[in-house]
Length: 146
Image 1 (cartoon, rainbow, N blue to C red):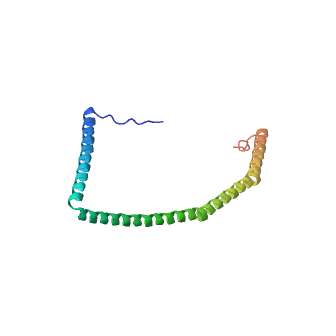
Image 2 (image 1 turned 90 degrees about the horizontal axis):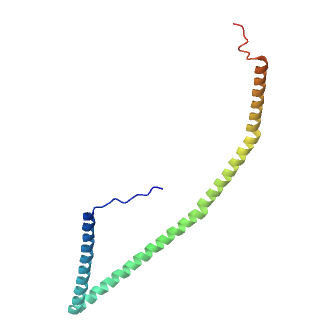
Image 3 (image 1 turned 45 degrees about the horizontal axis):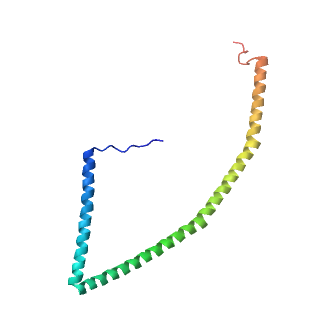
């Protein structure tokens, strides 16, 4: 088994990468805290507008939930169709393929036993007789006069 070793990084690259990660985490924290402060200030200063905005977001989330419900139903229907396809179309094909393989194996055994074995035996007997005749009387092609 071949194991791949990760490329060796120089220490300067590692330091730069760790600085980027620390800066990213710091920026996320600052943006998160600033967002919380702005939301609290807006809810204290403009309560009616924040309530209206909250209602709009609730409606948007409800619509999103409806869309996801429809998508999940469509996916369920597609999954049911896939299972039916496997059950009623692919399984019979596999069974027919297994039957065909069994038939081919039986045919191969039959041909091997009833055709190939007799031909091999007959050919070996003929070759043995030819070699015996050749041994007793020599090669007839060599016995011809010039």
